[in-house]
Image 1 (cartoon, rainbow, N blue to C red):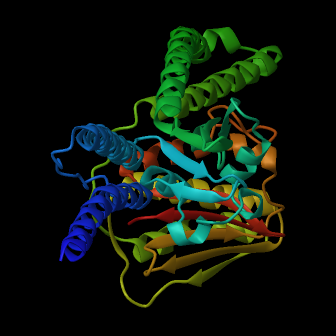
Image 2 (cartoon, one colour):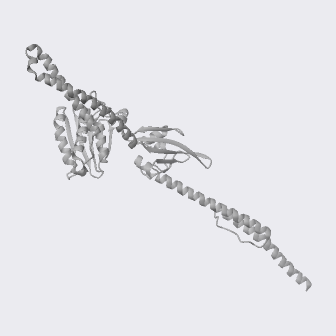
Image 3 (cartoon, rainbow, N blue to C red):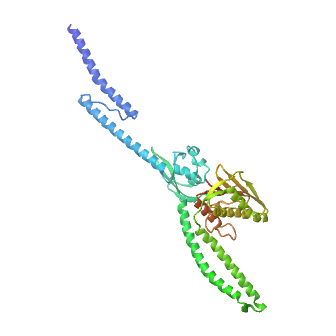
Length: 400
């Protein structure tokens, strides 16, 4: 009987000892598994045992710190993602192998591309003028360049450390508006100064010369005929110079676009008739690929007519002799393309073609395409001028 009681007591004591040893072990294993699974919400209750409760308190405090730290990191990550997404600067983030991992909306707008076109693709395999410049940049370098003679961008390449390894990101800043405003301010001052000086000189000189030409007593006798003819030529040259300066002044004093409903097809036909004689003289044919329906847009007819005249005039002069100027409208893209079979535009010319006073012609003033640029920008119309193949240069205007 005594032995049976002893056995029972031994079993009870063993069970108690087992519970005291196994339960802390289970608690420890659960804590390790929670940390391993990144579940920082697991906390343990006190057991009533001093040593064990001290360990549980330390564990619970550690879990609180880990949970708070994860919350802070998530908030920072969310803020960073929001900052990148809404940034007015284009941002392209690369992975360890210089493949595109992320591209924000501004960069997509600047590059005119979609996520699926470039995500996961190496920058070395992307055919785009901006990425061509990015490839040339080293870490911490920056550059400013034009891609179409109008749009100007600043690129800056930097890096950050992710899990011990360096990764690159590129910031793309659109400087077009600032550059155009500064450029217009400078050439506006120059033109106004030139116009002032020319007009102040031409007016009085022409007045004196014309008064002399009208004084018959001065020209009695055949010996003065040559001098009289020379003075008449001087007056005509002064008038040409005055007309020359008015062209520049028109660039500075360009009025705000008075947009009205306009049938683009009708305007194209009108301009082609106006320029038809000039084209015929050079054996240049006009080709039309216009839709049958009206192509309605909102534009200042007088200003847009001037744009089309300048573009067609440049196309004719580029061809020089025997070629084709094509007029193509595309309702789906709301665009007009004027294409010519001239020799094309070089890379250097493409970068400067819309700049004031720049001309590829021997006697060019360098204001025709600048005026075209200003009118189209004032209308909010996008445009592009480029040689896309041999004997195929296109000027495209997007009216959407």
